[in-house]
Image (cartoon, rainbow, N blue to C red):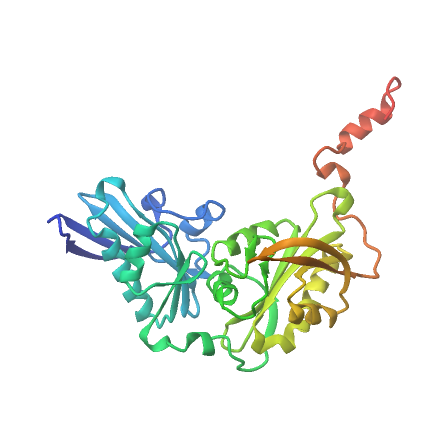
Length: 358
């Protein structure tokens, strides 16, 4: 634990601590996504994510805190999360002090780009003072001085990429892929309602949780520099009668369009392994590149949803592209595993009752 003392403009002494999971007594005093709070703050995710917490204390009590999340192995990109200052200590400069230390630590580890989001104009002003700028939607980005060409170089082609399953270490990497201006597809990620001008950070956490318990799969395309240049997520329908059907959402940076079929083919195989034989992709009718990519692995246009998307002053249709796998699949789960259906023990009672009919 690193500790230093800073004198605030109020004359108060702020003790700044840099903490690393497991946070023990501090776990209840800092912010984190509820879905992964216990695991992350308890240190169970250290294999994938490096998550230093910057905590400021006055008189032994936590007055403010924030963190950034970066891949444990590369630490080149990160997302700043859970910036908070206790109400009695606001406007004392605590957030500025902590953010300054956060950026210095990130740069010391060779970091290039930090992402965050805010809907608070006061917080936005703070971030702007520390060289964050509005980048996409309500999302902001900070680039280190030597990363001015980040958008042109970070996702540039550097050799053949490999497909693998997503891990929690891909949270910051996926943020780069989905926040990058290219490709300009109108639907960025269908599951988390992320569109062309919508930022992407916590969306990754939602996706990873949504696919748990054989509800779906998440695969990524990783280039030789360990950068995520493509991602595909599939999620099955949550009813007994539709469990063989899944929706697929994907994104690939232009420099790796040629390997999009590899990514999609791997996703299709994941679908087979999950007893899914019908895959559907929702594509805006204006996104010709995306349509051509899905056709290369056998998807075909099946339906058109008229005027589904408002695009400026115009309307866009959503096209449903479908791939039917020839294999006959068995139901992965019994009807009783789903809401409203009769459980096995209930069926047995009905069957054995002499006075009741099913």
